[in-house]
Length: 189
Image (tube, rainbow, N blue to C red; front, side):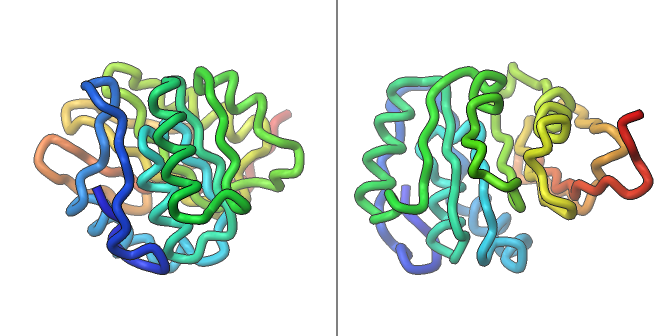
């Protein structure tokens, strides 16, 4: 796997071995980043099911300010660490290991909210609405944040009214939904 564009263009990154992770294919990543290219520069990024870290690393290569990369798998975390160090992004990346709920609760208080969130969990963990709601309730999303959800085409994704569908694309068996976050007239009370 390689970084497609930006400062680290063409650099190879390692991926976890086995079937525990499902890396986003290069052509899907390339298409995704051409769609979201205006949202990436200076963005604070969260990659909650990072695997190899390819999505967050691609964002950093294209000018994102910083990234939090998280995964439950120890093997994935080792790959992420190696990739972050190899690409020279140690000063702009925070790596957290654990279940997604525990990780969201451990995100450093210095993180002022995310502009761009990647949610690409294992396809059998289709709790997208719960993920988005926990991020919202912990005030980890900036107004207008873009949430990118990669899922199997047979799975319906419905989020709360705080999230608006911006775009949806199909790549074989994979669907990518783009949602924007906005409080609008909503209040918790």
